[in-house]
Amino acid sequence: MSVQIPFVDLKTQYKTIKSGIDNAIQQVIEETAFVRGKHVDAFEKAFAEAYGVKHCISVANGTDAIYITLKMIGIGQGDEVITVANSWISTSETIGQTGARPVFIDINQYYNIDVSQIERKITSKTKAILPVHLYGQPAKIDTIKQICDSNKLHLIEDCAQGHFAEYKGQKVGTLGIAGTFSFYPGKNLGAYGDAGAIITNDDELAVKIRMYANHGAKVKHQHDIEGVNSRMDGLQAAILSVKLPHIHDWNRMRYEHAKQYNELFKNVAEVVVPEIGPDVSHIFHLYVIRTKKRDELQKFLKQQGVETAIHYPTALPFLRAYEYLGHTPADFPVAYQFQGEILSLPMYPELTEGMIQYVVDKTKEFFSSK
Ligand SMILES: Cc1ncc(COP(=O)(O)O)c(C=O)c1O
Image (cartoon, rainbow, N blue to C red):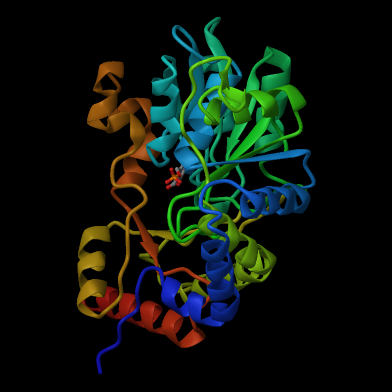
């Protein structure tokens, strides 16, 4: 049988926690606790405790988590929010949804926001900075926080790819006014459908977020404002509660896999492996290499049964959605160069040493034939 290595393998993980998951699903169905309810409350409590924060507000997905947070801290028409050029579009589309304008910053060698370029982009309209801990590696959040403090800007962390990653020993998502999370199935902590959450220590913001996500009502039928319908399902919450106790082991396994990949790629000159920055614990949501022959390598690996992906083939400022900002490659030279070279290799806790060896061997085979 030919070798097949998927990019993500949620089935194998399910098998390792099957009885817990099956029982949780059964219980939700028997209790018909489908939307909000005790399983959602229990997950919110457990997630807040795991982060050591006062509030966790669950929402329908990670995109809503950002949008609702921006909206409830008062971002709107005429404002600017500084964010990073390489991310999933949720990071910037939510800024646009509030009526504000995304102001992009180029990335550094860690694929995160280049903090040395932030201050010169601050204007009288800037209201917040929204960094992303991309691929599971924390952005240089202490510097970003200093910039926010000295310019009176809000700091919101997009932690969709950074569950329990740390910067100088502090969990990312706890450094600004709020941290936003996605529990999309393929995330390090993933539900079996869409789900998201916001964490914060700000009591007032927590109340507003909860209200806005619930049609603008703090109390049933008393709608103080128009809000949105963004709720976590009971099934997703129950599943996430079963998975939460495993997250540190799973993150550790991902890290070990990344170390093995890096070690095996050591003498492969054509491949640039991910660099781990100082002061961070990287949780390797994605393992991203760079190579000048990215498209050819991806095709070759596919023929060899190895599924890969690209995060992201077009950096945000160069998407058609942002044509109105009039950017050129010279505005974001690093993001522009990297978008043509990055390749995400299979990465999940259940990968085996043999699978990693196979991916690397096939990559070497590709380059030796060149
Ligand atoms: C960096 C980043 N931000 C936000 C999101 C949005 O999360 P969701 O897909 O749950 O809406 C994602 C998910 O892909 C993401 O990777």
